Length: 308
View 1 (cartoon, rainbow, N blue to C red):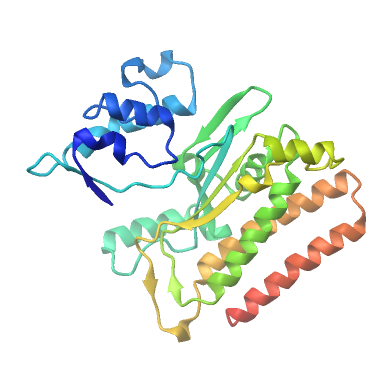
View 2: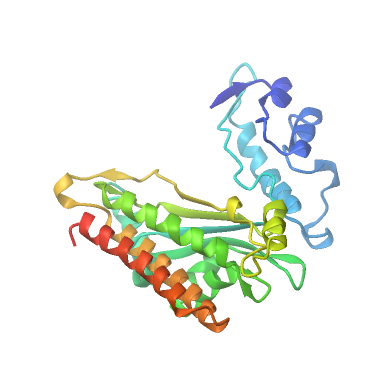
């Protein structure tokens, strides 16, 4: 966290920040620290859609709250966060609210009741997760599709599965390379969570990858890797985030079974998508068996670690 004066905006920009952000902060320090020029903003319905414009509108609305944080000397307090999508050409972002219980026992009775009802009415209860936000690029229409938490709450199990599968599509092709790595990362999280005595109330799983093939993907294609050869596997980030309401329980109570349920559901869904896709393209059964064996072994380890 940094305390800076308005004149120090440019020096406060993180080294890997978007250059446009640094420029707008430098020349307009007390107005809108956006990714584009604040003076070019036009009404939402009349401007060309882009993630940059979306971010500009978001920061413009939040700027008044930032201004209220100034102290008597005119300084501002900022928490500078890493932008995991920095440098990506076509960032795909998925925010999943994890677990079957989102309220901390120390919250007010009203909040506990409201959050419990929300979980019961959504896929949080049936799958241990629900979509809080999703951004993906439609290759055919050449535009982004963005959905919010209210849309996520409206989904049933089949709707959730459809959205998760679409998130990993490159046109009509499943991005097998990225899905395989995602499954591996989820299994690592399952094993890690199984060894804790924490309750991750209200935590989320953040999944980000670049839909653009990049140099690595193009090299794999030239090397003859047709299936998944254009996937930018190295761009994948899988992060467990949002620990405001986390709680520590006695070791005898074991890990957070609601979170484990959500992670295992997510792993199973993507494993099913992958198996169905490989069968569709005629992948040898031996390959499917190896994948299934790897996933099942991880599930057994997680179950043993959690005492189930």
